[in-house]
Amino acid sequence: MGYSGGMEQEPHDEVTAYHEAGHAVVALALGRTIHKVSALPNRERLGEVRFGKGDTRATDDWIEREILIALSGMVAEARFTGVYATAEAKEDLRFVRRLALERKSDRAVERYEQRMLAKVEYMLNDEGAWKAVELIAAELMKHGTISGRAARHLFELATRE
Image 1 (spheres, rainbow, N blue to C red):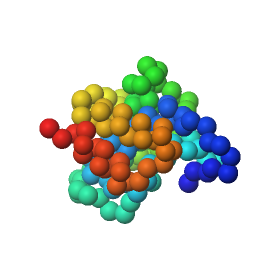
Image 2: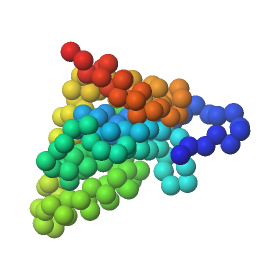
Image 3: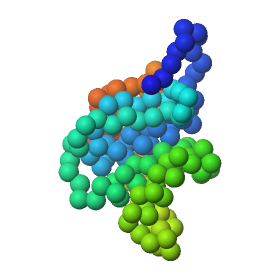
């Protein structure tokens, strides 16, 4: 949860907004239900996507889905800034490594992670998906937090043919 502390709020961090929007867009594309997207910092993180219960669409490979979602924040941020901020994404990358090790041997895990990273890059290079990232990031810049319903609406608006 974000905080306002009763003080005048600074403009929300644009890089964080793009990072969280990336998570949201890939999650929505893969059928995850989103409860809330926030670019407001708390004690533990700079922003977050909170997922709702259940999926809007069943998936055969939940490990791959969760890896793709976890990598998507860093990928969206990198597309916006031009730099992969691996230090800032260390919690996401730790989560990815933990899941990847459930799937692959120690020797094969790095190649698997690279393949998943390439898949996320491909997903976010889609014109509609990137437009959805931009729309969600813009709303996060304005409001700090948006509902999952608002995120889904912006995603659907951007990805309609």
